[in-house]
Length: 261
Ligand SMILES: [Zn+2]
Image (cartoon, helix red, strand yellow):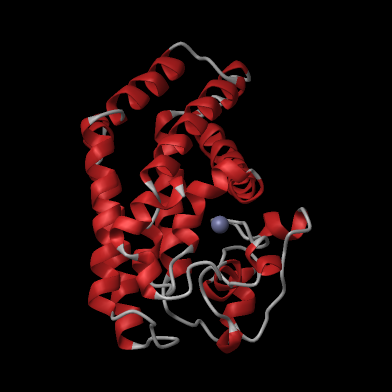
């Protein structure tokens, strides 16, 4: 397990599983036509995801993991002080990490410097399973600092953090996939988990809709904190940002430089 955590193979396995399942689903039964040709869209977003993973693996991943192991072994953080068993730590960590990720996502929209990084993700003109990989390296690095802070204060086990991250990755691939669940399952699933319909509203080019539906895995945070936008006409949603309206604005070089102009 430790080797899998250090090498990141668990993350790669989760990513490939989601890519296969939701990729197959959206190819067989796409919900809406894409603006960019699918091969180009897939390649661009997967290149960004693969580059980020490779960069992290050869630079800071081992350091972050060693830091989290140090916290765990020295029982630093609230849950360790409460002396919870592994199962209770896992449950409390999973729920809190998801809440913290909701808050962190909201901050990316509300703090201008953070939005500069996060808008790379929102500039996607289409949503498909590969959109879950399209994050600027700066956003990933900034989020690592956030995770180290959560480890320090909350005290989750390393395993709990890895399980939540794998769940988050699969949830991201599911909610970005170009698929429609259809009723009655859409309403049932959305009570607990963010669905593609719910998240598509978050990617609308209408600012009021973009700045809502921030939940990442569990969907109830938006309803609890008043940031939920109820169902809209899904076929009428324009995905992306008004300032980057066509594929010419979101080529790979422009995406990498986007936070700086
Ligand atoms: Zn967002």
